[in-house]
Length: 422
Image (cartoon, rainbow, N blue to C red):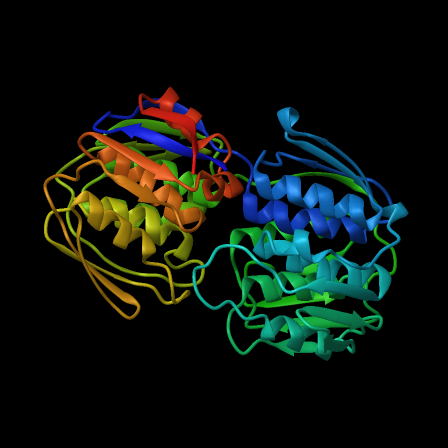
């Protein structure tokens, strides 16, 4: 069996300009949302990543007509030929966001049969709040051995989530936009991609108000037209590039960003002594002072994002002093630190708290990515380390980052992708 790995020669300072691809999390919700339209939808700025290719296959299996042009970052979806309400297990298990086909198919056909999702192993991610929302909308929900079967045309209602859930919020929106009557979502998630999905739905004729706050109001519409929509830049790729620039003590200009989405990370980098300046859609990251230790606690947006906890904790392995990272969202998101111990990192993990004692130098080693953001964190560690680092299970990185090594190499990194026998 052949596998790919990244070989990184460390201690290369990143300098120059780069740009950010379209949002992974936005695209993976907007693409299923296009099934709700009564005409073709053109989605622009779609990243060329593995998860998008899986979604293309799912759309075709449902009967949709799809034209995907990865080089142009363009996908055209005509949902008028959709005839199936069933997503196959083999496709659904490949990624977490497959659950968005539940809300989309339910809203379009009044029926959905979607296996429980897969994706990265970063701890328990139950979908009980999704089930609660579908039930509240008047849908019959049953578990058919690893899949959820949904049946019944949604009827508007009031839904109060027991906890903040991005996936549950988006799925409820998808199911409710064509429901009979009005729906109110309370304790809703406020992440940028929740707002992006709402903006897409409004662009094709839906009536969604309040996205970006904890209360979203949806006026059900019987008809949604097709349209053209451009996905926002990827918040997590932006943050990963910012952290990579800081980690290599570089000077990098990052274009096609939304700086306001990055305020939680920017504040922490400034606290470390990194220089961060912004202008319109541009962020510049420069080494300013010795990297100081931090206290970080992940929270729902606008707090510090869990998806950037792994990349920034890689940076903290070389910060001056002791940093404490508390992971409040997922229960199994410190595997990257255990791998970095091979590289000389000093880490103590107790439950959901990691204590990181900064060291003066990391050394290259063979490490293994166990999930998407773990892979990005190990790449950042490799950029800092003396010598050569080999990161295997590159397929995780390919799921969510478009041409990550090419972008880093253009800034001065030395990263080679190789194929080896396992």
